[in-house]
Amino acid sequence: QVELKRCLNGLVVCSVVTHFSIIAFLFSVMVRLPIVLLLVAGPRSACGVRDGSDERGGVEVEWLATYEDTCSATCGRGEKPLKNDLLVCISVKTHTDVIAKMAGRPVVVSKQLCERDDVERPVPVKICEEFQGCQWKVVAATPSNKCGWSDVSCAPATGRPDDSLVQYCDLAERQGLIGSREHFQARYGLVTDGCPVKTFDSICTITINQPPKDGILSSSSANLEASKTKVGEAIRKCNDSDVIAITSQEMYNSMGNIFSPLSDYLASGEYAEAGRCGAEISSGVQVLVKQDKRKYLAPHALSCTYDKNSYGGDGAWTNTKGTAFLELSTVRGILVAASTHGQRGGVLSDPRVQQTLAAASYILAMRPQIVAWGGDFNPRTDISAETKLGKEILQVGSSHPEDIPVSDTEFFRDPHSGWSQDPAAALKALRNIRDTFGSEDGKSLQQLLTDATRGQLSEVAGVRNLCPTYRKAPSSGQFKKSNKLRTPDGSEVQYSVWRNQKDMKPIKEWMPYFGCQADGYPVEYFLSPLDGKTRWPDRAPSWTERIIVTSESAGFCDQPQKVISDEDHDVLLAKCYV
Image (tube, rainbow, N blue to C red; front, top):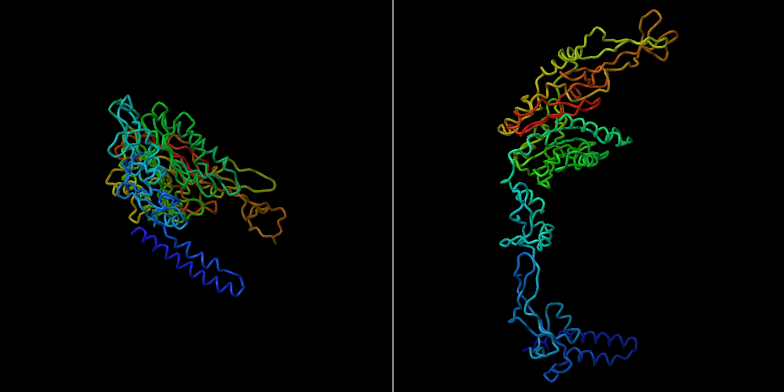
């Protein structure tokens, strides 16, 4: 039967060679070349007969071994036994035999041909390596003080942890079969039996909006230094807090990245870094902890994720708005630090509302015991310079020059000199305006959170005791050239290039910014529609920065504070006890 199969295999080759010989013959007639040897030798070489007389001679053979498909180990080194019933002897004498073997159709010959000392017999078992069943496991009896995170090593599902198997867990991790070793340790390695009653008891949340550059052609070094100064001052105001969560916006955008260098700078200071999540969208977050409290937070973060799709996205010109979430394991439970850069819109903005509520839902899904959520949520105070209330507020908040310059070439004046500025009254008037976050029903951020989270999350109260955090002005105001001229007789005329301006003086008018003052703070100034460019409510004085914590912690928070800026956004911070 073996010889018959071999002969049938040879017949296929014979047929091919015969056809080739005929074609070659016709070609030789045309070119008058002898080809007799080809016609005679071709079929014989392919259809040569192997018989028993050649068994101890030139036939080259080897064992074809088949081993079990499954490795005896699911994680690490194991064995695959030889299947003796499938052990066959094959020929590897001719090119045809070798090709047939490579194609999976080897030429099987009598086993007696392989039963020789010079033919190597297959090993009874084959060594194999497997990682499909590998998983991380906690090493028992660590840490020694029973407060912190146990070591983690690799093990099969039913075996003990073994450091020699770590390489196989690493392979499984790279294939996406298991998570990282650090994540597993942070999630499942926590031991608290020996922890003291007092570990860490305060966390201060800082939120800062600081773009990397003021313009495309400007340098980021100045803004980086400004952010170091502002955050440094905020940390001092945190009053020795055990943990600090720095939530930032716009430090990463299309013009550059100062999130990473600022985080590196802060991580090398008096506080140790517990984790960071940023430099992917506008929002970023970093958590710092006192050096002697570092052991109470896991060595590595549980997760760093972003939500830019819930009414965020890449459509903005300079930045991608959304929320960054940093999840950490602590001896007091899960800590989620988050930063939101909210959608602008106007006073009403459903995208802003939905974006914030989606972030709240995401945070609660992590089941945190501690929340430090800050951001520039971008709500706007419902005020317009065109309304009666807006005009009244402008009158009480608009600044006046300390003195009126006198010049022989220009005339200076304050067109609103009849108004009386009272910055404290201006704050009171702003606070009396309803605190709407953006929904059609006019609900505040606190009301929206209460409804959406069933009272689990709350805004830190007292932010509106401070002056708004946006949009700041660099000074109390400035004199600006008008389109009017003052005549020698004291009257005024419109400027015109056709007008004879002899003995006339250009009139410079005081352009006031809007002043506000809270208890314990100096007068702060905001952009005003009286500058001819600013529009309210788009850039009205607004409490855009907010801080959110668990409702349980909200009742144990100090009065929020600010680090005052002379442009754009202030820095807001609040220290809470957990």
